[in-house]
Amino acid sequence: MIMNFFRKRNALVRGVWKYPVVMLNGFMRWFLRFLVSLLAIVVRPLTYVLNIKRNKKCPPPTNPILFKSATTLAMMIRNKQITSEEVVAAYIERCKEVNPYLNAIVEPRYDMALKEARCIDKMIASNDRSPEQLAKEYPLLGVPMTVKESIAVEGMSNDCGTVFPYRNPAKKDAEIVRLARAAGAIPIAVTNTPQLCMNWETYNNVTGLTMNPYDQKRTTGGSSGGESALISSAASIMGVGSDIAGSLRLPPMFTGIFGHKPTPRLLSVEGHVPDCLDPEFEEYFALGPIARYAEDLTLLLKVMRQGTGPDVPLDKPVDLTRLKFYYMNGDDSNVTDKIGPDVRKAMAKAKDYIKSTYNIEVEELKIKNIEHMWEISVRVLFNIRHVQNIYTDPEKRDQWVSVWPEVLKKMIGMSNHNFTSIAYGPVQKFFDALPKSYYKKLVSIFEEIKTDFDKALSDNAVLFFPAFPYPAHLHYRVFYRFLNCGYLTIFNALGLPVTACPQGLTDKGLPVGIQIVANKYNDHLTIAVAKEFEKAFGGWVPPNKDILNSIKTT
Image 1: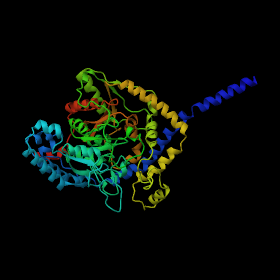
Image 2 (image 1 turned 90 degrees about the horizontal axis):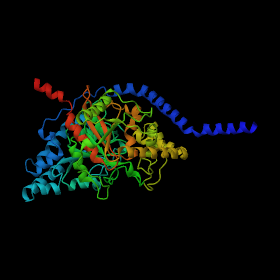
Image 3 (image 1 turned 180 degrees about the horizontal axis):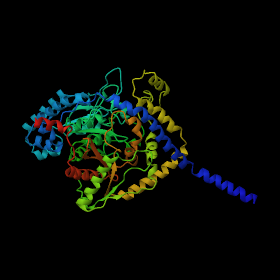
Image 4 (image 1 turned 180 degrees about the vertical axis):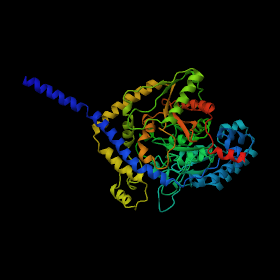
């Protein structure tokens, strides 16, 4: 009997300690939600006060040139139906008109852009190459573009929102910028980003806060918020951004345009600030296109893809009738907020269209252990080593200087760095201190989840997934809504291509959209569905059209 008692006791002890991970995980989820609730009590009232004077309306575009896609403009320039100088001048004029409302531009290059446009016009007028030959050699010939400040444009600011005592412009173009310019594109400005891209609110201590063209009181998201604000206000036709935690998807969703996070390594990340020494960095981080028109995503990807990248068939025709369609309303983590009514309508709109148009049922995708993906994605991203940050030792890139002096300087108001850039250090140290055995357990679950996604999506399916629980919120509310990053980071961790697709405006006139996801190397599927939705629902809607309507009636 005594021996049986000890056997039962040992079995019970083993059983209790077999599941500490699950118990801790559940407690931490509850604790995170509790902390966020406390933050909301403080931050939410402040957001009303801080935004009370932001009530100017960004004027809607009126120039017909601004309503044509980059694909169309390039064709018109090649065929001498319009000059590059006319197009570039129209966009420069629009930049000057809207930037006082948006604060999206870090540094313009208007004079140089006009000179480059005139040179292109002379080249087109003087050579005997056919439009078809020009299209093959220079698919973006004469078309203006903008570039996120974190991506190098030779001679332009590349400090990524960091305060420096001296100007340190980019020495050369980032690889994707070099390819775009070689294809004939003309950069006209670099656009605002949070310091070192470390926020879902586009603010830094150099350029300040970027505002949403649909409502100045509301955020553009981050970190590609300046780029998205300028494109959605029709002050840029196309641009490039970066994505380590949703930055090619959240800002486009908040501003009603298209963004695409490509399959890992399709585009080079060379020339981006911050960079990283970890060879696995490119599995989770990507540069990609942002545009008002879905067809321009394909054009930009074809131009900017690197020769050593994966074989993604961007030109492959897609028959939507042969695709499988899935949806998920979230990750079931109980950490993120549930989707609100506006996003629920956007998801239903997508599902109903596929059902009514193609008679294909959009099935709910069930993935085992998906409730762990919020934590897994955060842990996987924080496990990336040697990401450049404010603590990186300038003499030894693989080492840090001490974290705590900068934290103390911030506490007494003496730091030039933003809160999120400073917080990165203590948060990274916290994750580094957690038991490695726990991380290994998460990774084993992660591998199973990746396998399940791979089987479900294969090469013939897409997934509809919310980009955020609700449309653009008031500035600074991200500080108690940051847990909703899980809607975005899940696909960075999984390494899947995603297209941010607008689904129209809410009753309050704010853009709302969804994510369209496919398996690796199937970027053409997500973009094909985005093009279909653009035709069905209208795609980008110009901001503040009611101003034009009121002028017409008077």
